[in-house]
Figure 1 (cartoon, rainbow, N blue to C red):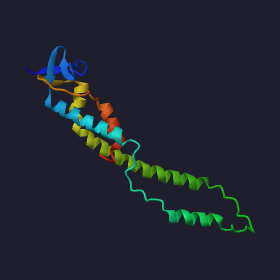
Figure 2 (cartoon, helix red, strand yellow; figure 1 turned 60 degrees about the vertical axis):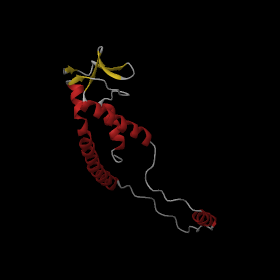
Figure 3 (cartoon, rainbow, N blue to C red; figure 1 turned 180 degrees about the vertical axis):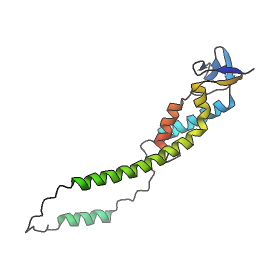
Figure 4 (cartoon, one colour; figure 1 turned 30 degrees about the vertical axis):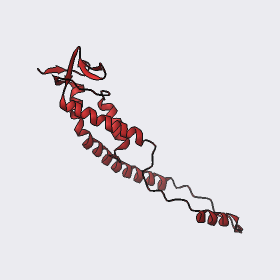
Amino acid sequence: MKQFIKNTELELKNGNHLFVGENPVTNEEFVKCQKQAEYIITFAKLAKGKNFKDVKAYSLGQLRSEVMKALEEKDVKFVERPEEVDQTLTNKLTEEALNFINFKENCDKVDQINAFMQQFKVLRDFETVGLFFDQGIVKLNKIYTVEEILSAVTETIELL
């Protein structure tokens, strides 16, 4: 027997099983999305602060070269360099160009996030109106919200 359940009615109890009141319930698509959400949120948590780009090692030869440069006699200045001219227009144009580049990158990122989040439409539906659940026993570690998932996806979209 299917039962329409709103997000305020669903809870985890008796060892993290899905319940409505005293009745155990399940919805295959909901459970699948929750397990995927758990993976993504754990992934984002563990990926935070890690560098996944190749970093070239600093060699002893490079260090020696830098030490020798630092110890060399510095050139003597016979004529001082002129002071830099105020370039407010150039600075504004540079800022505008950077804003344009960032806008394009941000739009691309938003499109990637929206495309990735399509798999969680069921959870959004559940949060906004509710879903039909069957009687059954299923265990989840937590009921994740779309907001939690979106936060994790936003942090790690480049890695997903």
